[in-house]
Image (tube, rainbow, N blue to C red; front, side, top):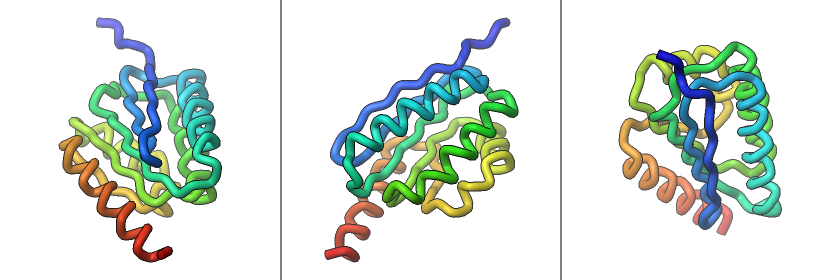
Amino acid sequence: MRKQSGHTSLCVNEEIISVTLSGVFNEKEALNYKTMLFDAIYTLRGKPFCMLVDNTGVEGGTPEAFDVLEDINAALPGYSLIAKAYVYKSDIVMGIVKQRVLALKKINKRNFTDYQEAMIWLATEKAQYSQRIG
């Protein structure tokens, strides 16, 4: 059975960038995701933001795609990222990301299997950040 090539959908709502990824990603598709993401970040004009990444439809990726993800996550702290939540259905995908994307260690992130729990956590992180900065 042929696997579906990578697909990205993205939306921004109240300083939360929601991303849904599905299929198998190669370098070209990962670079497309990177472009879409940073275009969305630029529309926020420096405002602090959170990210929700739904990886429940991800089937895998090439080593080059993971290199692009490493670049993305290494850059995010410089763009006022408050927190990043990942939603997975597969521990295998989560394990590969953890192993291949070392920049995630420098990001306030948490992994979830439930979309609503991830949204609640992001809302809490965003509210705590707002209280800290006054």
